[in-house]
Image 1 (cartoon, each protein chain N blue to C red):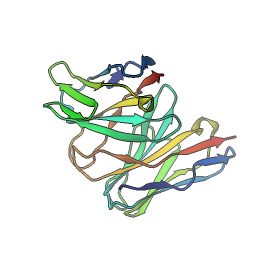
Image 2: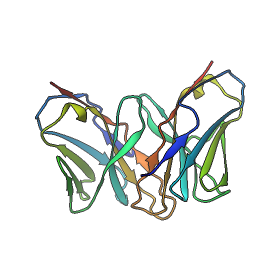
Image 3: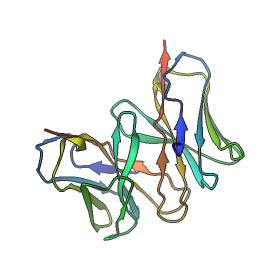
Image 4: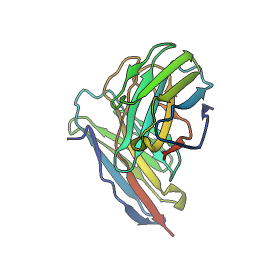
Length: 113
Length: 112
């Protein structure tokens, strides 16, 4: 069974802090993704990676960066957290290929005060 | 126009009812299609892929109409446990990167 693990279920941080969200998958998937989900807006792609040290911007990359030093781990970094980054953050992974579904971690609910 | 559009609902149905959701997509070159299920405050989980010829998994049937650019999900004999948000998902990109586009979801509430 696919396992995608996010480091925290709930996280509270302060404005201006640097925040790290970690994601680890155990299925040897090449592709990894970070989304945020907000009411009425659905899932929006922040960044994705299709290989170690490779990264591509998604639809809303501003204010975020990512790191993929190992195949199984994909980190999302909020460089200077702001209140509009309060959201549910979801990590996903998949094999490459058009017909491959993505598998999600159970999410991190991040609050920026 | 959104790339993937769904009726947000809620759909309130009694147990045992049959319910159908539709989803439309704007890109005629879309490559692959999925339905995901998301329970309240949980992560999305793959329900089923949608194949060109249509496919069935127990009480769930998915259909694809490329000419009209819509996807449907039919749930027969609804159970209380089917209550969730159903996300329509489309892959427009093909290739290795496998970027998906998610609809905002249709909320289903099955009543006892």
